[in-house]
Length: 638
Picture 1: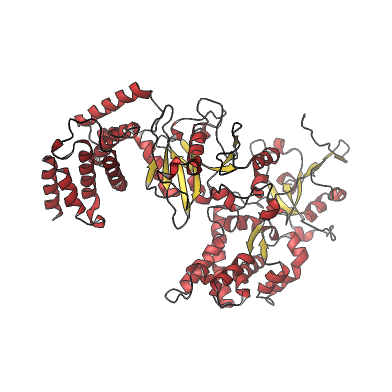
Picture 2: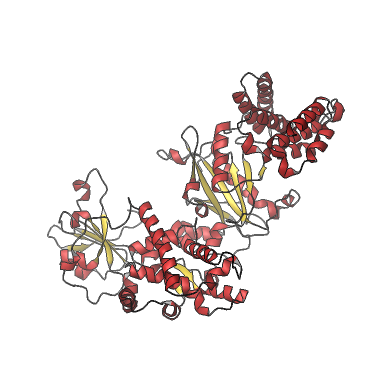
């Protein structure tokens, strides 16, 4: 039946009866048309737009742009099926050629048409016509070749989402920059706009950083952001697009380039638009989409880097310039770094209102709010179930930090002995209803960063795992919304057994991923043989020690106390120790450092004991007599 229908449509097309072709095809339900009928429908619309039925428009100038746009949308709806079909590329090439400002795309499709069907003279003729027009009209903008464009488009769809529309650039005097529009979806409930074309031109990166020369940019916009043609005439809705295009073109013909943590200030504006005070920008890796999204390798081997552009307030930019990217990020809640909000709070001037603590892994407050909002008939302790299970597992695995052990060592020992199994009341009353990343030791912090907080590509993935466990448990007997079922799971050893098995599986995955770079891989020391020299030490008591000291038995000759990252304040004293001759001893490799208790280095080098209470930023070095001498801090002129 389909064969007969296609034959009839072909006859009508040859008779220039395009409206009848459209009528016949559209009589078939859209979900039943398939690839072939969709392409034929697009062809009929494009022919009707240019020629009209029975070629009644053949002598007229201009085309029906609305019909042509409909044709292109039809072709794009079957783009994946058509990528290796010369006929699909031919129809796309002709349709785009007829639309103002889309000549470069038409040329890419015409060239692919010729590649797939090299003997077709029509392809060669169209390529020549388009090339001559482009050269005469506005020179040769830099563009990806077809295979490069295909690779970048595939990367965008694979890692950011399927784009339904593309904002095509009308004129491209330098680089042709389109914007792929990915609508809100289940895993990311917002629009994602990604440039496609910026990476065709190389940025002026420093020598040795050639892998950073190509880039594309993206932004996330709220699900209620208006992107229709009429709304985009208003700067209130258009400014993020204008700003994205400006950022994409900023490196051209100058010495500016985008990289992780780079910022851009716009001196000539007070703000991007009168509807916002945002006026600057920082580029970061698109962490919420996962590390594989960061880079796309082109067919020729070169990398295209993808960066997420985050608009900033002027005070946030100033703070970054003075204190660095990491310090700024410690002040920024996830929502600031994920989706553009023109009226969001300022991470610097509104810090007290935000009350953001980047060390917090989880808080009972949001779970208690869900219980209240949904009117769940459960005790409030249900809000602590998953938190108590995670904490118990970490205690059993010896993942708690020094400060936590000093404060709550009795609870840890009770859990490890089996005398305590329910930590819900302890989390509520003893920890204030919060799990903090600073509660864990070095390994526990790294795992928590991967599983709970630091990896924005799977924020609170532990919660996601618990929610998936609940949906499996209640499958077919759901009594509440899927997002709150985890609060209805019955508490008990069966609960803990199921949840701890999930955590253990994730921990094994993390260990496998970190096998080559995990801290603590330096040669071990038998710390059980050492005298306890720090019985009254309060605070974090672990440090980094060179393998030159631990493996080769060299005395410490240099030590420095640096302020640890906020995540590590529960275990890291900030001290690290070197023998001083690592470069000579290991000329072909970096010095390795292990994580050890301060008591260990004190047993090996007892004369460091008087130094340990020195403040952050202090360094010492042995003089020629073997005595420790305090080093003067470097000033800005050194």
